[in-house]
Length: 100
Image 1 (cartoon, rainbow, N blue to C red):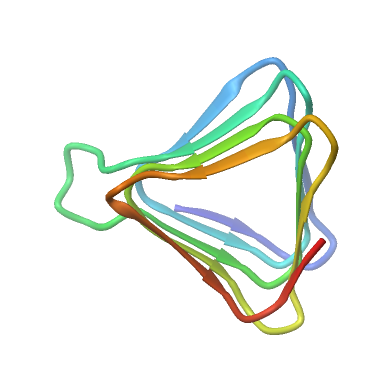
Image 2: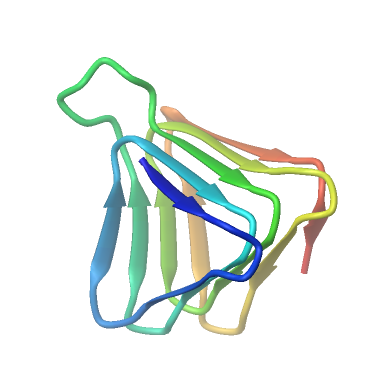
């Protein structure tokens, strides 16, 4: 489980962040051009989940290959030039906020 408060900042640059559990973001997550945010089913039975109530910016690769990625009310998901967002057959993207 990874929980980030409203003043938190996470940068994913030159690496892959592999979410097989639960990520809660109320701050800012930025996937740089050489970064990857991967969400997929792990060995545990728990469904991988991302709950974004802050800002999630993608200039690299976001792949939701399993579980739910929730961009909730008042949240922002920004896909910058060069960034790709892919939702696999076992993934769900739920948007109640803003997509930029």
